[in-house]
Structures are given as structure tokens and as C-alpha cells.
Length: 258
Image (cartoon, rainbow, N blue to C red):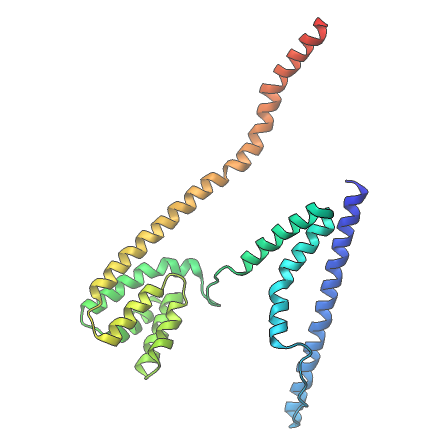
């Protein structure tokens, strides 16, 4: 490793240390302000209102662009010049795309929700075919199913039975990845009174097919990715045993002939 690379790595480590120090200072100030507010609340004194140094838009923009900017700076520091800027821009774009990817709601296990959705749709179709309403079916299936999908179904059913807003209740169910068609079917049946047993049964079949298709795609991707370590293991051995002796023999024959 050359001195140039060591210098670049040292600069990156220094920048990272400075960033961590700044974050620790900000966290300490936030903890101190929270402690002062708690003390003021205990003593019954109203704390003086202070305007934030940065507005909410500036703070959100800083949080949003801190990762891409750090990737750009790291690429430029490590490589330098135009190649460093190009690599930094590519890394910044990758970080930005990673930040913008859709995420499930907090506390929702995406794999467990994917596993539960077809089963929940089958149970809802059975309840609707037996004559239950969408709200009652959602509440009963949610209480019996459990898990992320069951909890959202039970909470939506209980909220709507108590007179909650239908859009908000079914909307929280639709936040689960893949559950939007199920929530829309239930909301449409509850709003219009149309029979929903057959559409829910078709939806369950479609969810099972989508899950099987995604599982097949993951298996194919794993089969492609596993070739990389296999190639890294067998290619050097093939070059050492099969190619190198032939090249050495040809080179020896040519050198002896000359």
C-alpha cells in the first residue's frame, strides 16, 4: 500500500472522526435541553421558548443529502481528480437511491407480512362468504391471525366498528407492503355493500402466485450470485494447474530453441 493511499485513508478517517464528534456534541446539547425541560416541568415553570437554529426544511434537507454528500467526498478524497469525482457521484447516486427505496411501516416485518397476506385473504373470503360484513370479518380474522397483518386488520375493524373514518382505518392496513389491494377490496365492499367473497378469493390466489413468483426470482438470483465465490475458488486452481504448466512448457521450448 503506497503512501498516497495511506494519506487518503487518513483523511477519510479524520473526516469521519470529525463528523462523529459533531454528532456527539449535538446529541449532548439535545440531552441537556431535554433535561432542562423536564426539570422545568417538575418545578412548574414554563421553559422559555427558543427558536431552532435551523428550520425544519433545512434540517430535513441536511438529513436527506448528508449521505450522498459524504459518499461524494469519500470518493474524491480516496481517488482524487476526475476519477474520484466520477466514483463519488456514482456512490452518491447509489446512496440516494437506497435512501429513496420504499420502506415498510415501523414495527412491520415485511417477510412475515408477505407470508400472512394470502392466508389472511383466504380467511376473509371464507368469512365474507359466510355472511359476515367486511368490518366484522376484518376484526375476527385479525384477532385470530395475529402478526403484522392480523394486528392491522383487528385495529382497522375495531376502529371502524367504533365509528372511525373508513379511509384512515383501511389506509393503515394498506401501508403494509402488498396489502393495498386487500384493503381496497374491503373498503369498497364496506362502502358500497357489494359482495366481496369472490373478489377476495381471487385476490388470495393472486397473492399466492405473486409470492411463488418472488420466491422463484430470489432462488434464481441466489443461483447466479453463488457462482461468484465458486469462480473465485476454482478459477485460480484451474489457471495454476491447467494453464500455467502449458504456458511454462511452451515458453521453455521457445527459449531452448533460441
